[in-house]
Image (cartoon, rainbow, N blue to C red; front, side, top):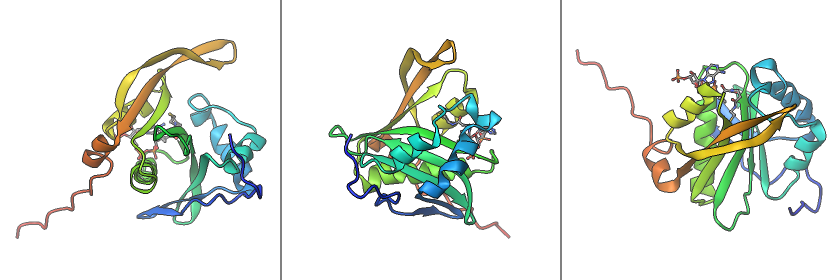
Length: 191
Ligand SMILES: CC(C)(COP(=O)(O)OP(=O)(O)OC[C@H]1O[C@@H](n2cnc3c(N)ncnc32)[C@H](O)[C@@H]1OP(=O)(O)O)[C@@H](O)C(=O)NCCC(=O)NCCS
């Protein structure tokens, strides 16, 4: 894994925006917020747990992208992407967690991540793992056009247990018809 020369905590990632939702590069000062969202009881059983130092390492790594999700300038979550230098043009959505769920913020953030993957990086595939017991997130990804590739059995250790993961992905051609499609505008009401 290559490192940034200057140990910068502001990787040259663009700020991405969709409506009120913004993805901005995470900085060292965000580490405590990120860990607090990650370790919140609503998220901790569904996402891996990293110490602040591991997040910082990711923020300063040349092949990772670490974003704070904001709504109206307030931090509401974070997203982590890995393998941004993959020669196979396959980007891993390592982690996404949103506080204040069910308000559409996660969907807006997912659209921004996918747009960055396919329209900025020009990648071919965006993929992720979702734990088999994370039914809501699993349905959420399928609703947004991700396709199941299979199950990675017992691939993650949680305490003394092993957890299996769905492997989901979306290809560039599929993105155009789903997450990348402009949302239809409401029709003017007939009077
Ligand atoms: C998955 C997650 C990022 C979605 O973000 P969000 O802001 O809640 O998503 P949205 O508001 O855009 O969409 C809500 C949809 O997700 C579903 N959903 C998924 N997890 C949910 C949760 N924990 N609480 C409420 N709704 C949830 C809802 O059923 C809703 O479906 P609908 O649109 O058909 O009604 C967020 O729920 C979360 O942080 N979950 C915990 C961490 C996690 O599982 N991350 C993914 C690991 S691979």
